[in-house]
Length: 284
Image (cartoon, rainbow, N blue to C red; front, side, top):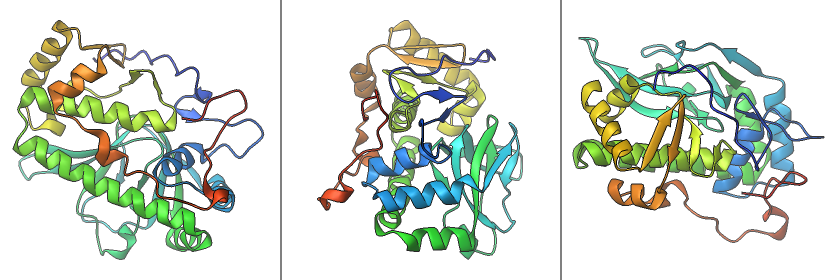
């Protein structure tokens, strides 16, 4: 769990370099965000071009264990995550931490948070992170530039709200085994659309302490649950890589239904009905 060797990159999808997808002959920076949004609602060519253009000129880097957003301070920009893992967290006065969500490549975080006087939570990096940093004017111009893009970003916010409801259910009603299994299922399902899962395996740079703070359990209890899942042959967790041996069985243990992550696509004009594809690669 604490091994520092990186996982092998996914094969058979998009070429991946340190969690950043590249597309030959095209603007590459925004591809994780494009893949993520295009899974929710189909993007137009104009929307894709606008996103690539805006993100390419505003790329920033952060190291592991840095605060991108601090509770009580204003949020000045919208961040589109291109590589790396982050978490949203709340810290109690006595130092106890609750992780309320994980932020993954392709996610947009802090959308419209600039409308509030201050952030009500902290966003911290778990790994080195690359992101597009858009100020309010950039973001609002981007949303206004294309209807398909604006609707996909709204859909992403709705999916994030649905995810928070699932986390509330986990903390309130799922038992310890179900909570951990559900989180594994959710993270794997979220990584697939952005090309960061190979079959039922994915990079997993999350410590047992992080898992404990996300599931409301102790680190000792999380360790026992992981050993139980390993013992039944459902998962393997080594060298910062999660492999699910039987995804359907893990879903059954977790009472997991991925519908909240995939709201589905409504009918769209023909020019919008497309996926982001790479020559020689299958669209996901």
